[in-house]
Length: 368
Image 1 (cartoon, rainbow, N blue to C red):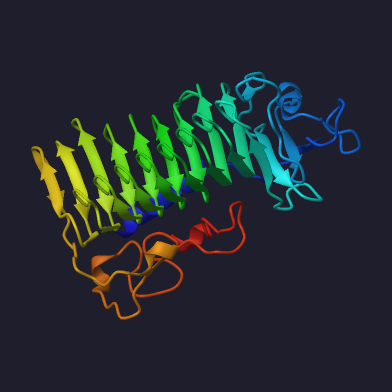
Image 2 (cartoon, rainbow, N blue to C red; image 1 turned 60 degrees about the vertical axis):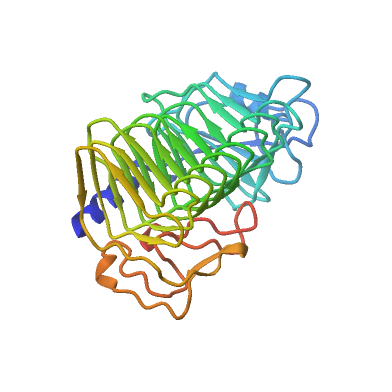
């Protein structure tokens, strides 16, 4: 189990962008008016202008004081010109007074279909709120040869999905609550996000590989996580109150790993594996729904527990275990023992301070 934990942690850490190289700072003030050159003294006045003129290795710093809205009936902002890659990624990040100060900027579709259409990769989106779309908030044609990252973002008030289509999305430390599914993508890495009150699935992936670690998924109409293909790694998630299954996997022929999750109160099954190969174990399967596992090979690593006390106050977002909880810590080798605690219980609990949407969604990677 220690080797599995180390492997997953290395995979995630190596996959993340490093904001340590030198970025050329550019600026966008959507309340400025006129046209600018992207400098601090003469910022771009529209986000579309910034997307059209940015170069690889630059950071678009969006001033947080005025929401950026697409002009006319454009259908949202388009990113289709400049490709970032390697040490020349393109950052799109909110700020208040100085670059990278943690200020939260808003991209408001203002009733258009999307907030943003991403057709080229190599972008990092950070410290942003996406809101106001009648369809999917963010859509993409990015393929496996390109990548995009989202860190500390909030997606809300979308008439469709949060992020839809495309391959290899990296989403971590973010909050998503939308009318459709939070994430409907081919594959990706999803780490320590808070997904809640969605009208379809929490995370829905259609291909491989996908790594879902340390997410809290609370109250979705259909499945907490649905995977339509193999090579799924689901570790340390807390999934609660799904209208379908908490985890549902359709597996064709290759292995999946479902370990160390808390799965609580599903209308159907807590854990539903329909396919050929799966390694599962050390999960807590609590309250409604048992386990449904079909196929030729399902390897139970053991350690499942049931019937523990509920969370402290799940209805208000407190997913810490009840203080009277006593568990056999040896059943949870990855999270280090799911005892009653205040910092993590598989996933890091949502906190009501800071962050793009009023909460801290991720915590540090050392908490995993």
